[in-house]
Amino acid sequence: MFFSKKLKKIKQIKHCFFSRRNGFSKGIYKSLNCGKGSKDKTQNIRKNLNYVAKKMNVEKNKLILMHQSHSNKVVEIKKNNYEKKVIADAMITKMKGFAIGVVTADCVPIILYDVNNEIIACIHAGWKGAFLGIIKNTISKIKKISSNNKIYGCIGPCIGKKSYEVDKDFYKMFLAKSRNNKIYFTNKNKMKKLFNLRKFVTDKLVKANIKVDQIDRDTFAEKSNFFSYRRSCKLKQKDYGRCISTVSMPELN
Image (cartoon, rainbow, N blue to C red; front, side):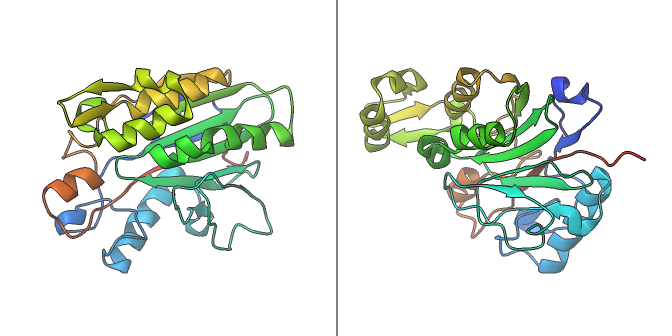
């Protein structure tokens, strides 16, 4: 379990970037696999999510996850839609007693909290979602609900720059969008570049005036702590687990 130093000081919220430890899954999914989209046994995923709900101190039907598809779609969770299937890559809510969560296996989990307006958000930011504007869209949606925002954020464990090899086409696509994107790449060899996804995402948050801190862990490199899509591909495994990151505003007693 990993925590943001900044968010931990804020009494109105509870958050956690969970590692892959302390769960019920076996084999390649060992142990806290929270990916409903994985091929893990349903009962194990259910037990894992129940464990997370308990740790977050919410009822299990009030731990809300998304069907993620690397889009730039943001959904506000309200009383009338929290039980429906959420197809999005970011969620925001003003509801207390609910935990909203994001599952990742190399992509960037981001947790936000607007202190002035009591709005929580979680974002699934892979390269595609970040490239398509998922961060900007989430912040816009928060600002649409209320102005005079003071937003704090934490960027969780994700694939590190040293581990993220990309080809020249990937590099050219980023440069075609903006020449400034050059700063996020370094040369690995003649064919491959290394991409700094964490910095790419961080800069988007900083530009939006969000006070950010980091849990600077590399999901690819730290096998015992995190699931990794890329590592699973490299090891030729048939599937991979997902770690969960979540935030809630507890109900006041």
